[in-house]
Length: 104
Image 1 (tube, rainbow, N blue to C red):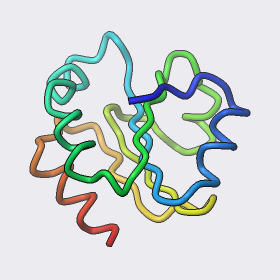
Image 2: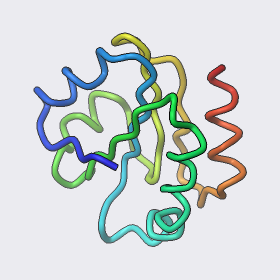
Image 3: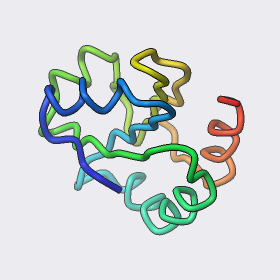
Image 4: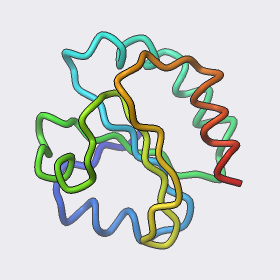
């Protein structure tokens, strides 16, 4: 999964079709729980481009998008937000896949 490291890069990325951004942090235990199965999710949903944002490095973006709990997912299509899975819960593979399925 590619990492978004600047606001400029974020604005370029979201203007593409079918983008899902995972907001995460290195210290987040719930983020580490989903890390092992995220490559399988990326493979299964290859019609999406997946990116990560380290919330500690791009806090301004997290504030702009109202991302307070991590891990969180926000989906974009052609520059428009089309869905989000944002809460403070630990997420399961099934829940993440359900979110992605709901975007169709």
